[in-house]
Image (tube, rainbow, N blue to C red; front, side):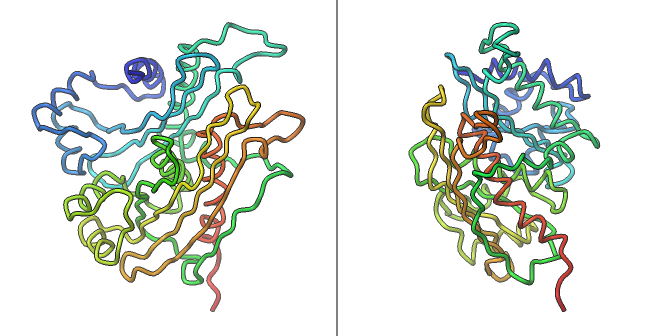
Length: 326
């Protein structure tokens, strides 16, 4: 029910950065004609057909996680920009915005509304997604401000991975040990965003690989075995598969009385051998992010997930730059 409002905000924001959406009716007509029920599972070939049918040069696919209809307003969503001629994600952006952060000094400025929150979230999303040096690859790599309260993630990296990033990685939907709907997809998107923003590894859109596994009888939420890994390598050309679990996802109190909490574990597997190349675990609370007084507290689980994903993955990304030991 929130998608039409977000789509209108994106239709207004994207053209300012050279991304002009085709009429959504054309996409709906294509889905009806091709009998595609879930565009998020469209294969690379289907996306190429969609582009040819609508005249689109790029495909924007994403997920909407939260869109609060009542105060305090918040919006959280992601988007992957795809080139129909290649499987890798061209650019990616993920936004988690609290409407209250739009207030000026001492609460000044225009009233905070749902529409204003969506417009500002769409504007920031478009700035991050826009291709070019000022787009997602540069903006997404910014380091979060350090907090003395921040715990360090626990992780391990195989020596063979240092200085040698896999050519292509796919991030599978995360399993959930929480009842919060959409938490697994939100965390997977946060992880994917960080990898795409690093520019150190090619990240394949997950739709095709997930579809291939489903066709082989795999069920979402189950582990991916050695046979499935080899199938992914043969069918999609990925060298690494990153899988994980959302172990905690607590939205907290929007007023800030109770902070959100997220905890995740993840591992990177070699599709050729099934070996674990990297594994890590991290837990974060929204009140562990402040820099001074209450400044910097995260009040949404989506915003906290972005931070946790960055902290979890930065050591892995940094290891791609290390010189291997002889």
